[in-house]
Length: 94
Image (cartoon, rainbow, N blue to C red):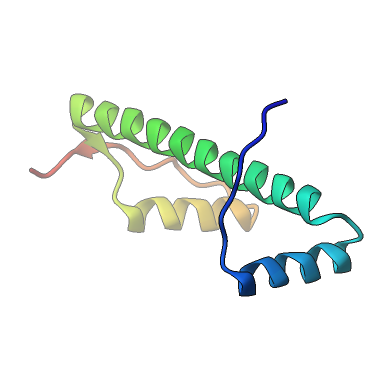
């Protein structure tokens, strides 16, 4: 394990110490958990962005979309347990 020095304002250090105490952990443990949580959030966001970009590229390539109003109606009917025809895709307006 490596060592890293973090410079922080005294007021933040006090807040971290108080939060760690309330959590039943040390300031060190609290900061490690916070850094790990922030790194995971950044990774999840990057994954989300990658999936969104790929999906958008497929839409642009195919030109096929379903208007939100039609899809919403379809989903609401399905949730209500009704039999409803799936909306047809149409060409993307450019």
